[in-house]
Image (cartoon, rainbow, N blue to C red):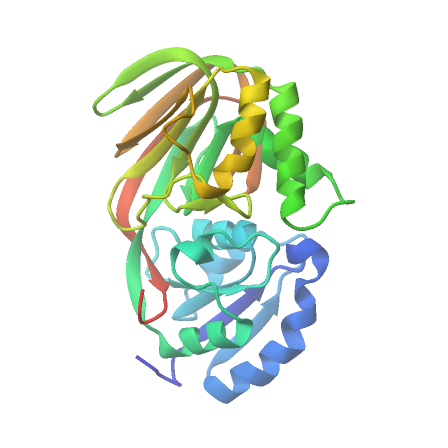
Length: 301
């Protein structure tokens, strides 16, 4: 419900959208002052921990708005997890996969109206533990998925979705798989895997529909696994993943679970919501935390 007295804090990540996000600050100041009596706009310093900043501000404000892309949202979520704070999103980053899953693929002006309407719902989060720990709101990518993200963020001479295709191509050519053991509440398997992606949302990498049936509120992880297949076949898969995995894809499997344990024979690259987590990760445990985050969504979500 609309409430001009809602206490709302906008956190702008200046590194988002390849360091172009702060250009929206003046527009936001003008528009926010028309809609909320009690608001604050914070342009984070590059030395700031966004998760720490979000946790601190959640003690003063009802709503914390992540102003950036998927990486910004992910860091803000890690600050709001296990608090009573509400997440809002103003998508001004280069990667906006999560907002598609909550029906927020709209203009910035429309997104601001959604925030003012203050219609909330609870969504699931993924808790990960092991060699690293934290919270994920959209997807966790392991193996080729993790390396693709790593290489995409290493390049500064490409922009937009082509960056992710470049990263994926380089990952396919360089990573040749690892023997992994995966264990869920209803299955266990040991095999040579190229990629494991655990999904809460549907999209990642700007345009890859990795989990068409994923639901942010169903209390389950949608798991996509890719076993070792010839490189040429994997390259053919790359273009097709814009429309999701297909039945004819050899070595590609989908499943659902509430938890997943992964152990690898070699160190792996891992990303969380497009944020690089490391290249030396061998063990991870993923668990769904149902209805654990309050989020502002469009009224027709």
